[in-house]
Image (cartoon, rainbow over all chains, first blue to last red; front, top):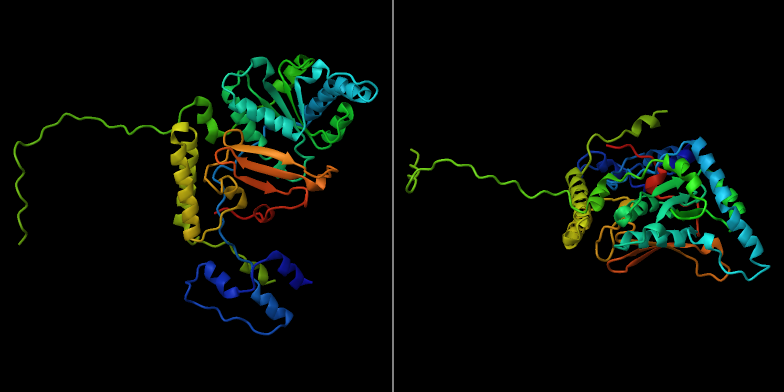
Length: 252
Length: 133
């Protein structure tokens, strides 16, 4: 039992001599390998070691914090917002109705939202009304976190040419079910809303208390100039002897 | 249990200078990226960082390496140099076939993450909470 737990703890190769040298001993020093196959010997061969691994110096990308109470308020407001969408999706099978106007201000799903944000980041003179102002992500319902990893940075870069701030709002766990039910779209976990979407105005105050995305190392993108400064070279007025300097005398 | 005492954090890190150098070069590269005038220079610095990590046989976390394009060494910043898409080519649209695609906007090199295959997959660097030095 104990040997099994040890094995799972240290998934390193059984080569103890190399791991020993990593912890500080010089490479030439060899540790004698224990031979034999008893459990005790096997335990000896596997040791917990620490291997250095370099991480991104800029990993401290934080999602804007939302208080749980506010989070549930936001989900409720979204349910209200999405009710007409849900009604449209219910009736869509009955009539071949054209897409209603109130859908214009929304993007639903991963790809449309990401695309819209990327477009916003890369268009120089966008239409102020059509710009995304709120991005909602069910962060805790989307399982591999790599799927939502890019949203803080993307929201930040989309600010480059926008007239407004963009709020990235993470929704509490379980929001995916409520949103899907309200909107009639399967697994709706990511959506964005523009400023001119109908019915959004009423919720502005609620959303506006959410802090903005802060990414310190990308700040110069918004300011449109780099952090580097040209070398500061000053000229000092001083005096110097006229003519060539005397040669150094050889030392005795 | 005498075993527990054996797992001490090392007091010194081998090749710390090289690690520091890579970290520095990466930050310079990131800084250069923010001005379109210096994009080539930015690539030079991150290329330098990768080459040093290979020569000195250093280990970088996958999350770190994924922020650099394998082909052209551009630092990938979502919206600026990175395009993110979710693809599902299966007819049934089974979530098992979801593939996350990172493509570099500079050279269109594509990195595919089959996220649907194993939703519980975790990187080794995220799994083990390692002490910082």
